[in-house]
Length: 328
Ligand code: AMP
Image 1 (cartoon, helix red, strand yellow):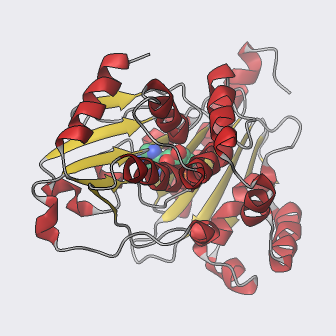
Image 2: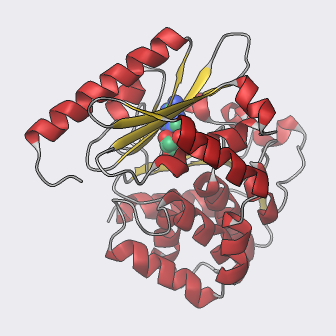
């Protein structure tokens, strides 16, 4: 699929001696895995090329993947190729020096909210951007070199973005891509321990969540994590945000949302929306956000807007339940 676009991307990569890789703000396993994995793939294939990944704030839970490159003189961007991975809109590209690159390529699996770059390779049905990078490797495996290091980064993104191969979007291609990576040699026991072990204090926070979360009339589970709660459980913003995944298995709740007070002067509240069966990205798009059909992010600026978003999601869930049968 999309062979010509992939071929055009390969040609561009061959053309340039210096390439910068970019990803999105509030980074996650997929954008970190895709950028680090692509960097390792390109470096192993073309050791003579300069391939940079410069980003300042890798999420703490992904720190085990190792640091990014130190910043370089900004003029180096000017005659370089930029490749942006896993990022739907320009506003979400974390390293703003992408603007200086001579040419920019977009590789992404999000629902496009805008177009940037050329070539643009977007496959919304992919369970992760890492899966697309593996597909790129599979397409040109006679030319590209996949090391176990690259495979580990890419597998990290595949595993985290697909909920360990559970979410909608996982298909035969996903598992064939995962098989290609496993064949390259990954210590999965260590990787899963690095990804999923939790601090005892987070268990205490979970107990609090279960006590305090609310459920709307039609089945939207939600929780507001205020600053006081973050301080009481000694949570970073990132740890507080992770709690969305603890609300995902309630029968009848086909959508769940966590609101995290960022403490910013503008009153921004980070919103993480999740669902099964029903698609909630339209709600995120109404509130400064976007993402995937069943996993989106947004930002609201007041408790009133937060309550509005909850009501809108509740109405969407109500309508879905009234018009569909196979939900639980
Ligand atoms: P999060 O809850 O932040 O993990 O976001 C869920 C998914 O939606 C991820 O794939 C994000 O990259 C994506 N996402 C979050 N916020 C936005 C946004 N403002 N615009 C587009 N995509 C977003």
